[in-house]
Image (cartoon, rainbow, N blue to C red; front, side, top):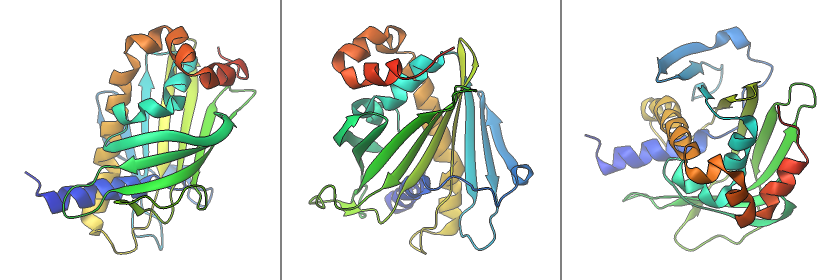
Length: 234
């Protein structure tokens, strides 16, 4: 059983690991399979000069690309599937594929909750139809909130690839440097365990009725309909 201090350190590590996806300097064959269970593959790799391992989580899901894209872009509902996320909301931006979002993570005593403002950019490969979501923290959009410690930086990458018209591959990858704030062993543990929990919750969330009939989601948020109309789906 984890004590509160260890649990909070682990959760904070995961929030910080939503960082820059591994670049071209690291070869694809450096990945080592850490765990393969329930249809989720978790990979890690060492990076010279970097405290934390890179991570990559991959999952195929029985859902079409249009459905998965709508769920990932449904920002207000993110706390329902993103592990330990307490709040998520749009701040500015007329379009979902170029907008600013506020994210707040739950805190567990004795560490204060964390938050961050991110710039979200979404693009689609016209050939493969793969959807890429790039997330970068940005200052100056929202004043620091009382009771929250603002994360100094956060970057994330998601990739949604259509396997066929009814199946989609979801991938999240990244790395981070906690700056000595978190024990390395705990942080690297979080790099694999907590992404797994998020992917599992995504699978459950996608089974909800509103994602089976996207008219429900589009009616609540016309921005999602506009995004879908600009994309191509198999």
